[in-house]
Image (cartoon, rainbow, N blue to C red; front, side):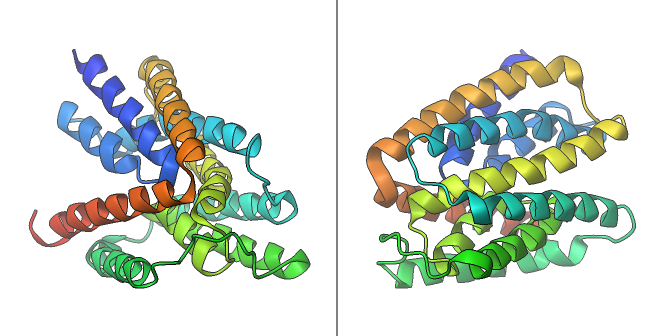
Length: 252
């Protein structure tokens, strides 16, 4: 029964994550609720062991239909990997508690900006090219990679927002690009958790399969319905993240 519950959560997480990120909003609470006495690092490791496959498959699906800007994105993914590894190390020596109270306000600002700018992300018009785009994408990868390793909630959604706002991508192209970088940050965190012995491999395969199924469904929906659909899901996910992170920071 426990495996069924968390597998269903993994499927839903893969679906949401493949569209705009935020799958951890579903799977991580499900793991904590199902295994309340388990060390948190182990549950985070289980989450990464599933989500890395979902984001990788989503990247593959997107690249077949979306013109990925590989020259900028591959260095950015490498920067994200390095940042995530550094962030995971940093959390062993520095408490991320200050971020817990700051995060809801950052998310509120992101949501307010997205709602105010109704045409934001509707048109794919990259503002940068060449080295400038590679540098900007790599900065995004490094900073959010560090954040993902150090704390984590909403990383995929932050990737999408910054690709839209800073680089001028539409929501569909931003989501496709975010999946590649999120795969790199998830892989870095998974390697660290695995080295520390914090992965339940007997659960990993089942949850990974469920996450991939959800990812395939979510990617299909995003590609079928386009950037307007992705934007709507983005707003819903960020709103849910505000409620969840606000509750965790001030009420729990």
